[in-house]
Image (cartoon, rainbow, N blue to C red; front, side, top):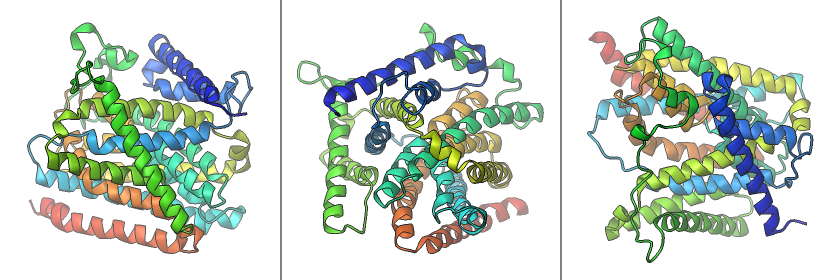
Length: 442
């Protein structure tokens, strides 16, 4: 029987695995050499020794449900986790937007069409099978959890495992291929800020920051005599996520054919609350740094829970078509990131392509990790450009994840994929006329 103590035990075991993963990262040179995240190590340990593997760790069968809750909390943080300060760089932001938005749309279209028209001819697959690749790659474990939960409500029982598997493969690819790209870039003179991979500081390898390089995790905006500042921020996040859950349940009750994911609704509630805070001029009491760290905390637990919840029997059932889908997805994504990045980005193209590779195959955190290797002092301003460009990317990403299950459940899957491909072509056509054609003339 599931009780609150079951939740306590599950979280406790995952916390122990995360600490063990951190210890392995600190002590094992292999983990340092390839920058393997402790959350990934914890997830594999949970998969191997948890209920889906040897069964030595007595965790419950609700690990996949936790992933769905955590992604709602992560999206509740997003509207508050960026201050968007700094000098505006309109052209660079426009280039980053076109580059990222087109890549995302084409990845969804490519994965869906590959599964719909080719793989389904050789294996008895559902029409939405190919979506597990972009859901896991471009969205990471968060989007994999969100779309898996949505398909689960519509009868797609295997989608959660398939998307989580794709996300896990994506993170591994972002790490190993990303590091190979850094070495390739330094050898061929594409990097702007490092000339040798061996120059990287120890704190990037071990993950332990020395005393003289430590930074604040965020300002205290509330006196602990009333409510602790961290508790204040957690309360905001939980309130936003609860509002998202309420809206999702309301829509589900009145429009059963339209399943609105909790994370999508939480993101909307967060934006509305942020606008209210801005209007009331109290936004400065919310620390973007604190929100960013809480989002990172939820993400670490999400990755560990997500990988631990993978059903190996389902993976084995779809092993061959899944491998074909994931390998083709990696190859096409790599070609896009390098070729279009070099053509579209006016300056620091390699650093921006490296960040985009980490984001398109793993998570934004993996993109940042790879970027810090090639650009330790963040002089390329890639993150500033991305943060502002993401204001326009996020609604499209949420629409993709929200309406893909609805489209396929109602027989409009092919139209959905066609629209994604067409929209990507339109944006790239705009980018060619606005930026690349101008660059060639110069």
